[in-house]
Image 1 (cartoon, rainbow, N blue to C red):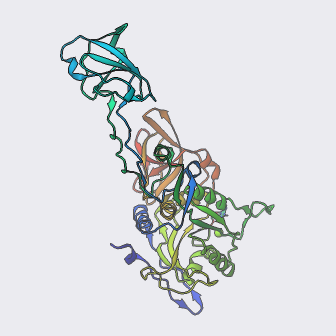
Image 2: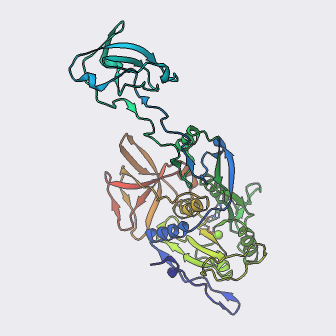
Image 3: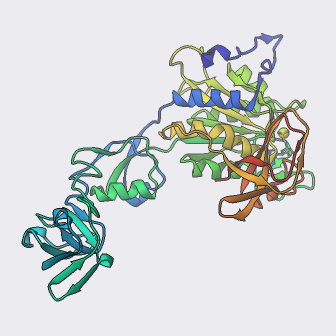
Length: 445
Ligand code: AMP
Ligand code: MG
């Protein structure tokens, strides 16, 4: 089904009151698929030229080509002797060593390897003309210029032919590649000291809640400090975005609307808190008033069930978001996530849903959520109905990876996440998972 056909229309305004959207609570998999489909259509904005090490972690916005063959010469991969394989029909073989070539030496200065001749060669050196194999030093014995070998060697052994890794002009890095250490090495190897990368998307972060105060303000006994804007800021940075922290919004529609407008100047809007069922949970109401289209208004997960994803119409340069048809092709709109305010819910729902949208805006090629498997150390009992993503610790030796839930006080317990390495994934249809069962985990990045 096309994703837009599942959009929920914004509810009509009745007697000056705006109703919240009809609930569309999806399974985890349905919600994730919809996010991926929307992310797939997003394109990054802007580019910049950066020096290579400043570009680490950024997304490449150009193709990079080999400036010559790789390797540029037939390269020896072992210390030993460059030989002719045809000399090895009968063993043992006696050869005459006529020269030596080391890495960095010009092979045209070395005499060609004729029948029954050998050239001593070092790893990384160019194999001289005439030779078609390198016999490892360990398989030889030498006395002065006489070399004895009692193992056969095949044509091409211990040589990487010229151009085997890439031919001159071939594309070695594609746009959308994340510049990790390996991609940086490839760019360096073709002589690129500067590369064109996508500009970082700006991500507005808006925490809401009457009880939430900024971290510089001494909180009253009944207030709590705003940690969500900072955990999200960190996750946004780590995903290649540029976080823009807005002031905390009180649970009051006017102020919320004002700050949402401010946030819409950015490429993506992350709101935390105010998406549950409480009397003062106003985020969906205000987004509805702004003409938003909701892709979903909840997912059957824990933590994070009230998570909301949608698009809000936006026309640049206006202080008021103009009413435009968000479903129209190419209509100006910005994506938003309403993440539940419980700090662990905020972190988990960012990872599960917001990350792919941000990656797409950053220019990254789409990536699937990666699961790995680990053996459960202690049994887990849960209620059925929700897929759970619970902070857990990994241990065990080598491939025998074991996992255990950390003790926690529920989705407000940030310290439990700090003590964890991953989220253990508990299926929605199991009341009891026994110790020793293999379960899925998502590594925490
Ligand atoms: P809410 O989703 O608004 O119902 O909030 C759920 C819980 O998360 C409440 O206990 C809030 O106090 C807490 N909370 C909401 N926003 C934040 C925030 N920005 N930082 C830390 N805790 C928060
Ligand atoms: Mg709240």
